Amino acid sequence: MTELTEVRIDKWLWAARFFKTRSQATAACTAGHVKVDGTSVKAGKAVRCGARIEVLTPGGERILEVAALGDKRGSATVAQTLYIDHTPPPPPKDLTSPLLTRERGAGRPNRREVRELRKLRGF
Image 1 (cartoon, rainbow, N blue to C red):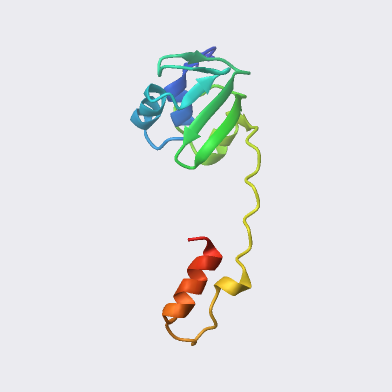
Image 2: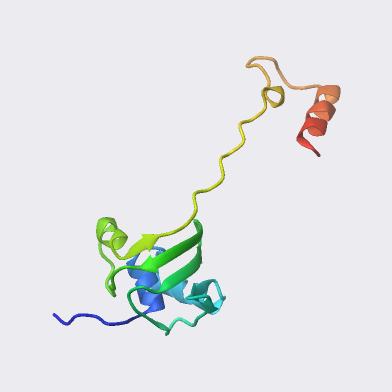
């Protein structure tokens, strides 16, 4: 088995399971959603270990560092060994205000209550 020194970015993103298909990874590169070391790249760009990748996936934006190279899709545990994730954690979700919830069994809100709820929600 030959040791890989570089891999196409679309193959690597697919092998690391950031996209379900390789054509989705290629489309993301074409659309400019993939940056390697700060510059947008095409799908044929070769990446090496240590490269910093910013990619907009269906799950949100991710900031990654290439830890290992792979051109074949394997299990999720193997895919996690291909990168180091530097993505900041998402901001905490605001807890819903108790004023915006209705008691169970209170029935449908009337017009006045609907107006008050909309005003509280900012609509």
